[in-house]
Image 1 (cartoon, rainbow, N blue to C red):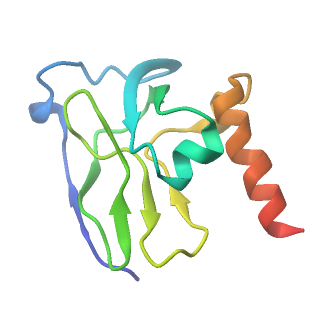
Image 2 (image 1 turned 45 degrees about the vertical axis):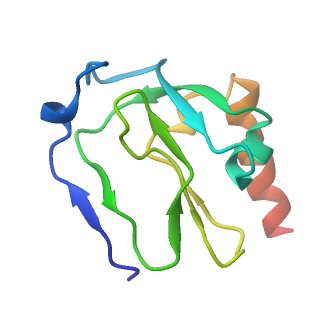
Length: 113
């Protein structure tokens, strides 16, 4: 719907990290300090899990990259028009025990009531 392009396989792009799939928070992500994602999570440095071999290469219409991992691969995106949209490459549902990740679900619930 919004377009954009994907890296079909990010494994060759890995230089500083590996792409070992796993549910545990092993990947480091740095967020833009003024991003909605940083505000929601309450921090700018996150540890997240890694389950994919694809990633956003070119964001879709009205999406902006607000965080990258150590290999400069896109992790979260947000809507550039101010709409309350956050998209993440990791799986916060497996990290609900991590306060910064649980905060994403609290934020989502507040958007729906």
